[in-house]
Length: 142
Length: 110
Image (cartoon, rainbow over all chains, first blue to last red):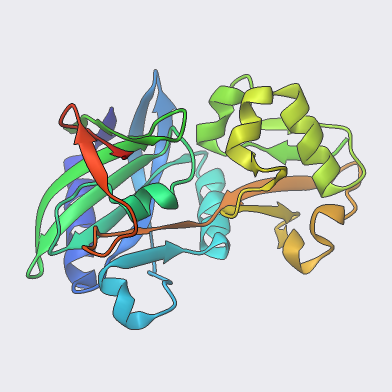
């Protein structure tokens, strides 16, 4: 399960809205607690997908940004527990691209739908341990 | 021995440790020994004997691609970090393979 404070969930939705029509992205900082990913902070990053026009349907977080996020998390005694990104004018469902480029089981992939610049539903996914697909997980907004 | 920091999701495959000290004179050697000690880690780090394309290794905060790659020498008090690059995106009609939802929740390759 992914646990997100309501105030941070709002920030994630706002980040998706201001990034529109492009995909917005960032890291979820927090702790892993009894199998749950508990979010206590955000580390928004720029969508570094190389071709600007394709940022409507693609996002990329570079290893350099990820390294800085890891170091920031360590300084706060936190971990990176997941990734958030938006799907402009598309459902918040993990796509074949999300699967093809997925990293590791255990990260929460929180996806927020943004229609016409307005944030909508968020859903969260985790890679299956055998890497064959994504499983949806519950989200608890606290 | 050099220390390898383990990213949060991989700790479940490494005895729940956030850092592991391993023998090894090069970055590649150290990672291989890590995977020998924790075999479940291997499939998440390597594919066909090479580091997965999204897996990046930093030696004391420097990307080993800009050093000597897996042959980069590591010393006693060095720290290696395993850093993923992350990408994804929306479902496009011309995506190269089909997917289907299973049990209303998962997405699997058909």
